Length: 337
Length: 222
Image 1 (spheres, rainbow over the protein chains, first blue to last red):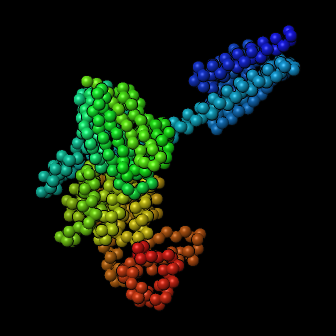
Image 2 (image 1 turned 90 degrees about the vertical axis):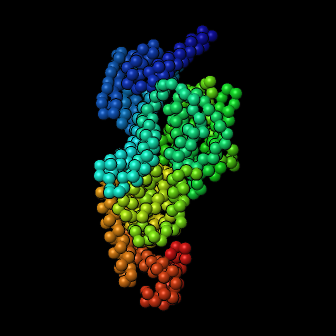
Image 3 (image 1 turned 60 degrees about the horizontal axis):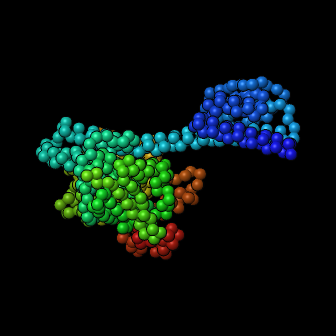
């Protein structure tokens, strides 16, 4: 009876220490070097005599040792791409159930270390992939802007004889678009919440403006106005309609026919956007998942970003994706009257 | 429907006769502002400019205007504006259709890889954004010179064939590629007239039918 109670107490103690290690790792944001530096305290409470480790961390070697070394130790070599780790965990001579408890705890500890390595690798690779994608996006838009500005500057510097009036007409047409592009380009670079005054915005006008940038044909019904920061609204529509344009064209040669229905309700406005030529969405559950794109050609943050901004503005954004009908986005914004 | 789409739709039909004397240039660019300014630059030099903003709008313009001498092509076009998929697709389709005009690529895509891919698919020249108006015009002039000389050679019965040959595939593969291109070209020139094509190639009609079957050439392909 006494032996059973003692065994249970031992088991509970080890479980508590394992839980402490998990919590510690989580509190350190799964940072492997930090976790290795701070793991000794709970391990020593579990009866381990000492630890030493050597970590090759993206080309830099880190090492440390705590406690005392001995003849009985568990060695583990872990390797994930550019990260490798050798850990020696020193233990006293243990037998029977003591060895069992010790093994369970050390294996849990090694599992945490291995997990941290994979988390770090995933984060690094993901960040690199997104940076590369973002660079491609910005490069494309930036080069178009620079090309436009350079051609305009050349034309202004030496306008062809008799072409001045035509040039002026072109500039009048180009400049608002140039300004829009520049603003939206800066917007892509900035993930900050837009500061500044809210003002009364006609949603129909804003949608037309965005649709024009994306060469989308839009049929609008109804009307609605709301008090909102215009930059925020532009960014939401930019992400929403831009993504919608791509989504509408996947696997089809059909020109998108975007239908927008505006509804002025009691305390909020509702915008329903649907491409009547669009195909049904095959992955509605992943629409708002960050860094996920169906073809690998998009950044995959457009809809996620749009939803974040809508929520920050006190509204909601959802998608209706019937299995045999085109996708419909429902954007709801408070009137803020 | 917005202004840009209207512009492309108008271009879908054949251009007016009074513009036929001017070299026809198709500008495929998805940025409407840039397209407008580029159009201006080209028109100032007397070129007749057709416009399209995507592969889908470019194809009907090309079909409706067989006299297009030069295509200025942005590789990054919707719906995949940040890759070269659409632009390279246009070049490939034009090469397959034995399009006689010259393709000048003007793109903001990564120069090293996209230039190689564009030239492999059959582009005549490659300019990366930003390029000076003068450089764009010079590229167009070069392309026009080649186009016009090739047209002159064609009127003398000389056909210039273009295809990529992988040396390791051996002579047989190259010969078959050349045969296919030549038969397709002659059929295209004769309006798919088998009798005339056979006469031009110095073959029996049966041989033309044999090639039609062998290469799977159909009337629409020519």
